[in-house]
Length: 216
Ligand code: ADP
Ligand code: AMP
Image 1 (cartoon, helix red, strand yellow):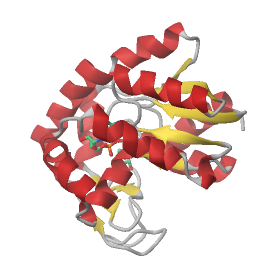
Image 2 (cartoon, rainbow, N blue to C red):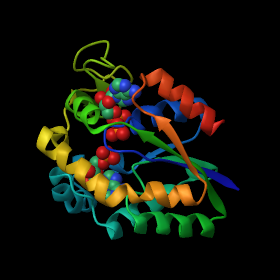
Image 3 (cartoon, protein in one colour):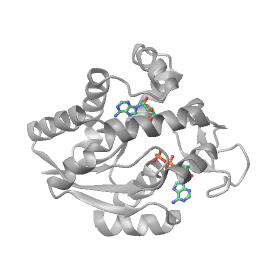
């Protein structure tokens, strides 16, 4: 039986930051739908071309595109014992599709940590976020500054500010989250899988809370 974890939370809650740390400590692959889309955008693939407009406007990419893309990723060999999902599922239909897919490969969701942060803090975090071009590692000019400005500590690639991190798009992404993704909190709570994490704490404290629930 392979074990999957779903990190739930609004944009900027710290899902990518925490997934990176927990993935390293627990040896579970980190699967970020946003990172896969951005790789496709950078390489100008047909998938990237389909996703670009939605991403730039802060909308969700349609389910039929997103579900297939994530399922392809989860079928790769490194996910055979499970994965830590970040940014997927983001709609009830994606959550249903994930359930069906996991059933078909005899896998399960062990728990769904929900990283909770209030809107004002999300805007501050996203407006100071710097992302690396190569692998999507994230930094923050105040809360997690890189050792050398503009350079990723991990792979040495250039850091950039995501187009969708500008204030108007962030506000739109928070609205989209509230309408389309927040219903998943109840969905997973009813299944007894939801674990609330206080995401307003400093990065290391959130990691501690997360490690307590993931227990790898
Ligand atoms: P998400 O993947 O949920 O969109 P990120 O992990 O990219 O969020 O984090 C958003 C920004 O907030 C990044 O710049 C990151 O460095 C910063 N950040 C993440 N967690 C915290 C935290 N607990 N406290 C302060 N800043 C944080
Ligand atoms: P993220 O990196 O998770 O903040 O995602 C960035 C953008 O990619 C989102 O605003 C969406 O446009 C798109 N995206 C990522 N994951 C999904 C998903 N599960 N469903 C639909 N769109 C997604």
